[in-house]
Image (tube, rainbow, N blue to C red; front, side, top):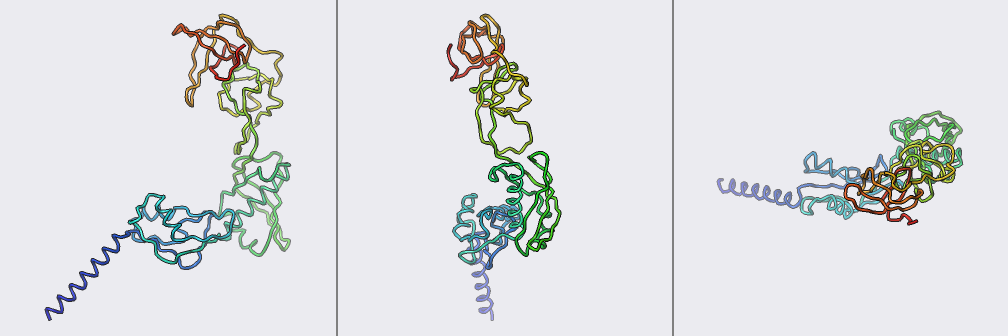
Length: 336
């Protein structure tokens, strides 16, 4: 009898040790789903296609949120064990700290709300572009309230549909509310409003140097850049702004707006006379410092490089005139 008890005890000890060895080989277990997984968003994450076991609550949350694939341009995708393994390694998990079990490949597909949102965003962007004669690829609309889509899903699940965006007097940019008429495949019409973020890709003029108040804008004082605009403003038209006078100081790398300039064009450039006191703006990294009351050693017009005396060190250096009593140190300024 005692011999049988000892044998049973040894077997139990062996099983416990074997389990501990198995867990030490990979404490966290990522169990891939056996069937296709439905994704509510346009991004497939580990939590969508697997269960995370033997992990702390914080570990489980972190691992479940790791992104694997995008479904923005496709309805479904396949995820392999190797894909999951590489994502965990990229997130900083050691290979011996986790085990991946289940099928070698799992599939994920977008749920209807995600498909509906993507299609609505494309149709709304196209209709908004049509209303304002803007190319559809320059318009982007992101619907921000998923619950609003849930009420529409049963009505629109039967087939195709069209949208008619209620016209606006001005192009809506930024956070806004869009009033829409939706017509389903049977001809039924539904009125709906969506919270949305609207952006417009456009060329804007950005100051390439500090521009002083009273400076006449020249073409070499700004550069044109393609930007995705998410804030409504009266952006300056470079063709009509060149030659106008700045109504305020404009820092370098600022997007030029219409109200930065006077409505009338200047007839002539401001000048700096010999012995005038000027402030010199010097770019340092991402910021600027200003040397006050430097003395102009020669006269010049806006855009000219002149010799300036630093009153603190009694040394001379070259600076470019950018406005009345204002100059800047620039490597591309021209010498008169």
